[in-house]
Length: 369
Image 1 (cartoon, rainbow, N blue to C red):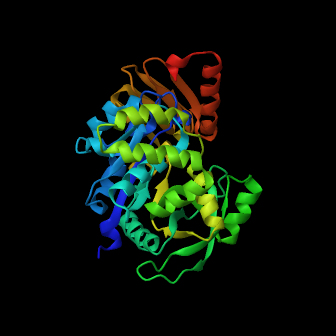
Image 2: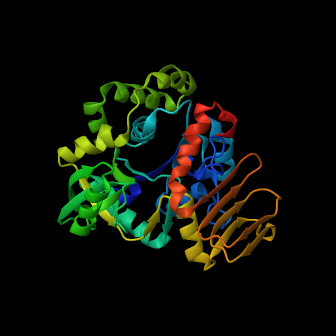
Image 3: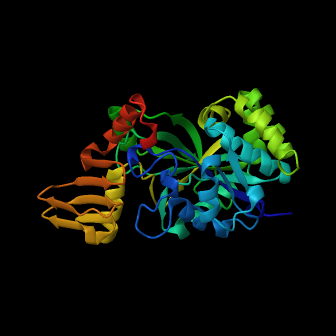
């Protein structure tokens, strides 16, 4: 009999544009392909590297067709059959559901783990310990989320309420999930954090593939039928024909709505606390904070530092051109200089970058997106 870890298959959904990181993150080169910490490693590469020791049978990546070349260049060891290319975005239930179905076809006892491509996690060893515990909890017949202890009452994340310990061998921290809550208002988020009963929903989960598909079939039968047809053809010469015929007609819905929420209502969801630092690097304030903490510099330069002249200034500068940039007497500045667009703001307004992206869309300037 195989151990739970011998049945474990990680998958990495690599999607989204990262509009709050414009103009650095674009549709053709979204944030998961970028190095946002100056380490020389993209977020996708870092995600793959921290999973590889847990994946004796390989890692699956799901991304858009437009990113196929970049993904395979960054992950040269990725097998072609483990790269799922979406012809168009159909939301997370289709992307994760298809990967889950393919892995289930290959191994009916598979335990899958879904980990977004654009998160920063440290230390890797602590993350791996938590994932191992989540795999053992999943083997008991649970969809296991990894909850992140809130550092502030953020309205940018969903929340998980879980308080009762499940008493599982090899998963001593696993708790029964009572409730998933969508992104709350500030007052509600403050009450959640103050109670100590809620963690952030970081979108990471581990589960038996069969249980995931069971809930997907019950909640979204049309989506289930489509991904199962594609999955059965995946490792055959009919893959591309089937994908072309079925993908565009799959319903669009999020994995939380299609699987996590109904599974929680049925008592099939558990949570393991994430005992590691985690950040989804959602905007330039987060990029600044992470890099300033690590480097100790009041003004962090991502790019060519020789092109930046600073006097009595703090914040972050992303320098992707050969222009000289001078900042004098400005606190918490954000400057992002690219070949065809320049962003200047302050860290407190970093979330508002998405409004610029919306304006560019309204103006039809898709070449800048």
